[in-house]
Length: 114
Length: 114
Image 1 (cartoon, rainbow over the protein chains, first blue to last red):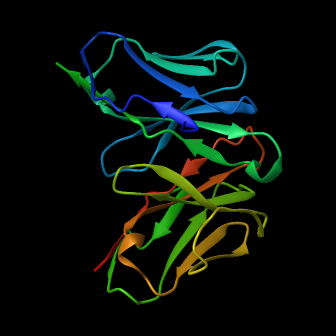
Image 2 (cartoon, rainbow over the protein chains, first blue to last red):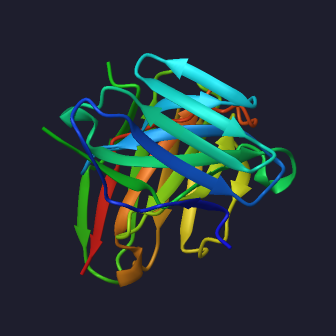
């Protein structure tokens, strides 16, 4: 089982819709979770982080974390064509040799069509 | 001002050559990282330095040698380049190396080994 799993997509949604991106992970020791957006040919850009169970909202973005189910998601409301990118889920583990290490999923390609 | 910068942006070289990539951050961060993104866009950590000290060294061939002259700089030297080294190499930095480490990425260096 991969440490961080994402549906590679592509996920296609119409403009104005809600895009839902999902991520599951295998290591119960994971304590912090990050969503990065990567446009083609560009570097990953941090858009959200979440450490506690529940929802965290920032503008059109909502991150949801459920540690019991080992599941983290990102909702994008009122999706825009400019949101079309690859979304990378990442997690950070506590202690040991994993200290400070981000483990990434393979990314979900999102396409928002007008 | 560029927060995390890398040089060169593109690097094309022959198998067997030795090359270096340089990274600098002006965010005042203590921790810097090297990541490799392969052709399938999978992003994987290689090394991490905290205040010039190596703290993460993943399973990377010893042809790869990082060096941090000070906490604002992290370089990557690669000896005897192989075809499989072709990838995009990203430098990143964060305030601290712990689990709550929001990492910020440089623009990447696309390495092509012929």
